[in-house]
Image (tube, rainbow, N blue to C red):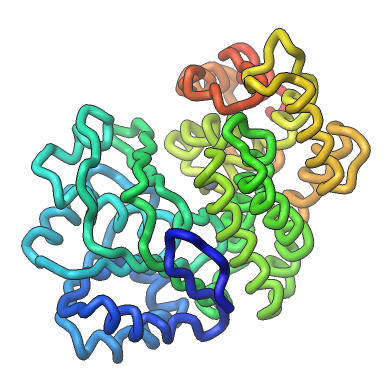
Length: 383
Ligand SMILES: [Zn+2]
């Protein structure tokens, strides 16, 4: 199955990984730089499929990196990449492997210090080689975005540039069949939250809302199956939900639940999707009460309320309160923590700390203005 995409070569469907051979031929590749999350590479079955193929090419492998891309791993990758001189990058794994490959390939082509490029002191000006993104989980949708997350001294940065968008995407749902329930739940919730946030984002367009609404619909119908009784059909649907969530936020970007989540993940080690889902219901209720005095969307509070109403329809709930309950029951059914204390976050001082970590200026993509005290109140409600 081919999913329409204007700027990426996308192959989607069971067995799609066999297309990698044709892509390498078409690109005239001699040497491959593989960025692989090793356990996922082996367990997903990707290694089985790709290793025979790699026998025909020179190959350099980069692995052994930590979850959530760190500057140290990016620097190590760039060093290895520069000594390798490959014609293509292949990323196999979740969001971390794909974001690392985006940054390694692109930043290696610049003279500037990677730290300065990630922190925004220097702009990206040149393309890296083509990147074939092969996700092994259904979650971040990183294969469809022009962003890459990177942590420098525990501070989270999001590098954004059109040159970071992978040139080729191969989504083979079979690679997700062996995912354990916990990872299926966390990554699936990430996709779901990204799409929900995308619908109310200030950056949303008609196009991003189309992707996001199909993604929400697919996640609601399939995530629980994928966690409890996975079938190939449900896995395929969640892969599509994740890819579409990436397409949606590639346009709209994410909002408050994502912004708040990064401090929770860094400090308490809670997986990204679970950290984001924690505040989603409360932020939905918060955003639903938007007024012209605190609306950040230039299209006005009425426009935002219309989009929240559209979201309530998608969630099949009459009020924001009930919709937040629907989100909670989805989280509960897939085994996600509903409250901070379930995630081991007990001390009230921590709420202030988490709130202070959020760059409120960067929250301008949330349709309702949020101050640090609003974030603290939201954290209290889910304590
Ligand atoms: Zn996310």
